[in-house]
Image (cartoon, rainbow, N blue to C red; front, side, top):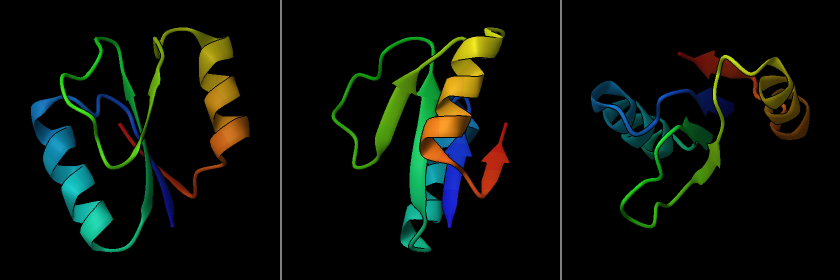
Length: 68
């Protein structure tokens, strides 16, 4: 399953992504401030209030599920 996680660098996002990766999901996380470490999943910098940026990630990544 392809999962898009907004706010991936937040407290809950980190644990959710860990669970999704352990379950074998392909993950793309979004962030506003850049992550400190290199991560084992795709990250995209977007402002979720920017409709065009959100549309772009949805069309390009094609997630099966979105966690916000």
